[in-house]
Length: 629
Image 1 (cartoon, rainbow, N blue to C red):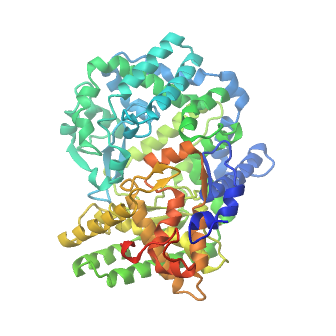
Image 2: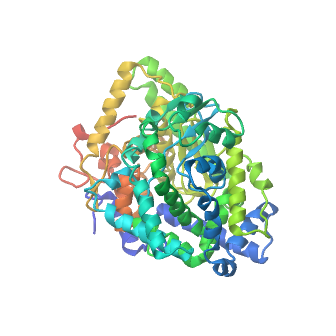
Image 3: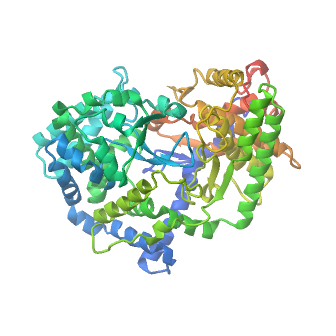
């Protein structure tokens, strides 16, 4: 029997860890995935009943159901075999030069093709109430640039797995073995140009640094093989005067990447990437094979079932409609009011702590409180379902792929049309049935979909100490993101704007370094954790626990044991070895076991509750404990 004094995570979750099983089509089991799957099973059961006519569907779900039926017609999809891939590749096969590609690029993007460029319209970091045109870098085959290091043992096996998958799909689509081998090798040659130029995942986490405005003329000058100006104008439908780059390093080398000499390998990269993508609309056997590389990365044993895949595909287009159905069925006004009350109590704790802060100057404190007071709170679901999802139609006489492309194109057109207009702050990034939460620095808002406001995170009638140790700590975690190393660079309106005094910012950065130090040399199942990659989330966990704990203590009959036990329970997780390695490489969140165990070591209340003393595994000396907010 594991003692809490030695390992909080393992002690609290001991029975669950013994009995929990990872579903074959999943890479892990956890409190998050268990809740997510239970919601999916419930919503999918209703979807099947609506599709079969066994129950009457709400009218607003009609097109979701129609797309689900198309996606779930596996007899037809299996009969079509690889035809969706062959059809999708025709526009790419017609390209014979970068000039051809330049002329076709906007349409490829609008139709959802992998085109190498990642662009879009998002709120401007410097003027958060206006939409700006953003240009990202191309993605690599492997999950992060660090995978391409010569000493990374996963590089070879993973590229081999990707090659096997892509070759199989190409051959199924009509290519000879020799042709498929050439396409795959060329695609990898083009991919090999990227890792030293693109941002690593660690660099991406410091997103406040990744803002580089360029005039359209300066941006267009990066390439002479592709008319970037005409491409963006065609996408937006208007002349764009400025773009924002996430990285200058890549674009300064872009002429070497998209040189005329590289056209043959770039075209084969396009063929390979889009073969893999459009296999999602082909037969079930091809769909399964198209997911084999992902399963190699995560260790999942098998592909999702045909029915589950059909549901997921329909949800990807009409998730906000299904989210509306979910919240009506499962989320009560009383629960929403109760969670709002918890949030306001924890924001009050933050306000008190900022007011009496002993390491910030009065000017910075005033600005921080002003930002805190302007945080927008979004609980459960959007005030209204975006009308565009109600207006879109599914053509049951057209193919699944044609419908998906049409729907994706409509969404892309909508998003691009917002360029240079006022930001819609009522919009949500997650559907109501999502088991997650987020802080948006550019709207200065915290967002909690109804999906996560369920057990084990929250239950309306249970002990408040448990709710504060569960959803309360998650809520306060999101508030803390307003003051992590990224969020702290944005003001109360969501604009990138330094509101710190020079001395206060320096002290803040020193305290952040102390958190990095506290997480240095930690491992999970023998895999090292990157303390710089996980810094912002570690700050949020530490601040979130601190605020939630104080808010819970202010209530009646507080139980510290229940608070910390619930905290440990929400991070329960079992994962495949491959998935552990993947998350350690790319996830800005620390491994769940460490998220449960490390923050609590900084609170005397934890030591008192479980009589933890020097020599116990969970003990941390007072002088080594870290605190930020």
